[in-house]
Image 1: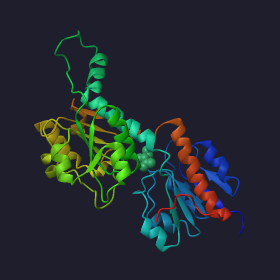
Image 2 (image 1 turned 90 degrees about the vertical axis):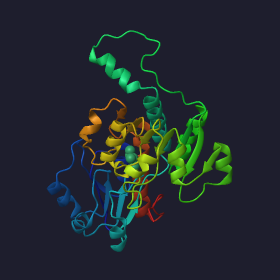
Image 3 (image 1 turned 45 degrees about the vertical axis):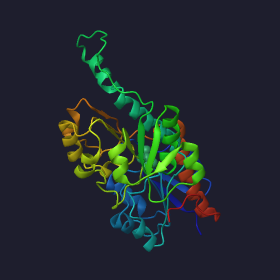
Length: 320
Ligand code: DGY
């Protein structure tokens, strides 16, 4: 085979680019702004491999533009931006970056739990507003985590890493997952598996850590929110459309739940205007994996997948 052409559609850390230069000719978009469609399609026309970021949509039209494509290496653990069956039907391998962002995302989820339960965003906004304030015995009281129950929806690597952190804060853990995690892990985390309804009805904090798919679209809708306790907090670091954002606004306004903290949004990067007006919501811009170390590790793993494909050793983390 001639030297493969590898197209990188978004700016990624250099170590990933350098690694891929060992096996092919790399063309990389190097700006933070999204790549214009015409430039992308011009490059895809001769691409053997494409390295994508989560804002790329790899659908039939994308694949039509890339007739020689052999591998799509997504720089993200989530791959809901890729039509995997369409890729596989055309013999195109798909890879993602599991594992390397587990700690960063669990750290962020724990941070959001603390922000929501201790009202840190609200406090920060108060100071920044310039409004007069002074210490008060009953000022901005939150709730502690010790002895509270965390319900984790999706007990993969990130869910487990979050459970570990929450245990250190004195929380008890229940989880909902298609299959049970091993008894050893359950023991180590003192975690108990239960159905979604029980988790929602009994947890002080509910954290979403499951992948997004047709099955999890609006998993947290008006009905699910009404099952939650009125003093409960919802955390989403997974994918926005798992939550029906309009129903969430209604629940937060009516007191159906007490607070929410969101790293991801249903129509990202747009945020439901109703959320922007609420004090009992923490909003951060999809920062789950946003550490220098983690983003470098993600780019490196995506590059290893491409290198493995072309040197014959095989991709490290293929999506099946
Ligand atoms: C992922 O990898 O899916 C994360 O959302 C990126 O931050």
